[in-house]
Image (cartoon, rainbow over all chains, first blue to last red; front, top):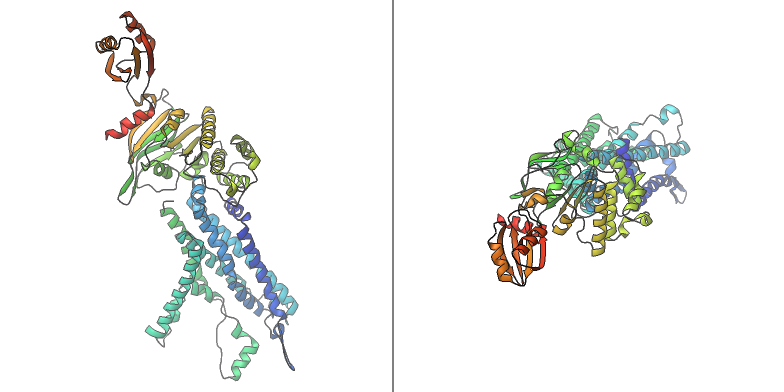
Length: 278
Length: 307
């Protein structure tokens, strides 16, 4: 295990592009903290984002994991190119000739995916903890560690997304095309959802029930948007007569769907490599 | 077909049985069988597209076979572990361009699970020690190929497999690679060399497999490849008399005139001194006498045109 991870890290360690993008990614995550400093002044009305409760425990876990997950696209570039480079440098072939099995090759890539997702999860945990401790109105230990499901969901979401990227890299061989494919896939999911929702199964729950099984949609559903949960927005909505009764929790069915997709992507990556003549 | 050897209890490094590979309608390798024994230098000969690289690709785990099977080291270990004891370079050298020579070899050591101590030694062997910290992308083709050889030798392999190692190199590069191959062969490493360059194979190989359109036409030792005993080129003051003497003797086969010389094929083993003595006794003095075996090229062309 450690050997396979070590092999992959040796490949990444000296890759300047991968290093730069990874650093940018982590710097951007820390920039979430900058949201705290956003302030508006409308005459007498003084508005400071940090005071709106977004950094309150346990809400901060939800908010930060949601925002940080958007940035995962940066690491996706690293993951996709780490696979497609093996094709373009023809080093995949050389690795196999040198005595790596196709299975070991896929495992080494997957371990790297786990490592990236793990580091990112620890990082977002620390950033949120520090931000929360500085701005949260509640500082009891039980409250601080009450929304941990979002940290778990964040990890699973990243692993699944990067596995999808890895699979696309294996399938398409070129990083630009693989990333393009990713975007096309997202559009296709939206299109199917839209067609079902407003064309074929109007005024039913079928569209939502079916689309929850789509890979990207399932990943997105893991951490639902946190903004409508904010006190300020809730009360504003109440005044307008709207009432949100949304379940913001991470659901087990959703976790299961995403885990199954992850397993499929990794298995398919292996199956494609096994079948292909390189 | 098994290569003939003097020793019966030899170690088989690679055994290929009825191996077949089809790419759609094209049969790239057709029912190929041969065995590679420890200590010999093998050449796989064949024109471009004869299935050399495909065969090597299959045994090196990068191309899937259609039928048949192969075994490394008598089947004691599975293919990818066997490859850790093999050094192979196929087609062009493949490394990570952004890593230095040293870093690339470090990676290979990790894959092959060997210690990194040998890196310096092998870089010295191929003459790249001064460039060990240069990025691979800055290397010339000759240097890349030499780095590939260093990489293939890191594990002191049981067998070194080279596919067209001098392809695309300049004369100096070709010479350097050949010298390295000769050095390695002299250390007793088994070598399998695929090439379409016949003189290359002739210079270093003891055994050959000849392929044409995926079919093995011959496999065996270089000497046994042609049953003939060689031929003589001779010249004398009296060519008429010489020709008559030769045609009357059952030891000689075809006699043909080529310019000022007579070419005579031998029907039985006979060295030049014997021939000279025989003719001198008949009163013929020779002004020119050379005994030669057909070159591998002549034999190869002979074999490949037959089918």
